[in-house]
Length: 249
View (tube, rainbow, N blue to C red):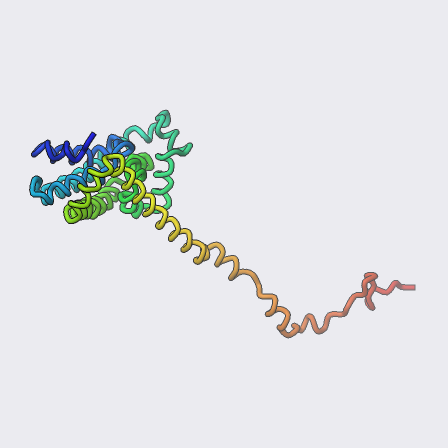
């Protein structure tokens, strides 16, 4: 299926296609099959040719991202918190939803912003946020900020690199575009992970700092002058008998 030709032939319906894909990526989990960036970049490349209004496209992309995140959050809050929910068991046992949940717990609100730029995290993170009980106001604030940067950034990238995107699509097709997007997302995630790991190895944890501060310095005790009690103490021989412990005849 040639998504670029589909968007170009859809005319005004292309706005609805882009909005539906963007909103459904995080609410219906279609991002597993088709990353939203692929459709947005192709639509923006077509907008560079004058067939689509780029401003309206950016508004729909940002709005679709916000609505999709809110729907995904509502699904997680309403269904994922049930004790008998199958997806809740997946959160506890691991899997992609479990990874998104762990990412959210580790980084809090910043994970909502960062996760928007990581493929599989973006798809499952709103559901994980709702299931974890994260306050909706806090989630919506970070989601709006992330959707704004992500949406406008992708539209601008596709608009100004439109010719290259279309040429790439004609040469490698949809599979090539999806593969390139996945590789770029994986590269960004790898760079972020290595940066976090390097920072954690350089910065001691609060527990380590407290323990090292509580440990006495052997050099201090070795060089410190003897106390009065130590100076007046009588040494006891190894056999346990001292001058004051001599047996009476």
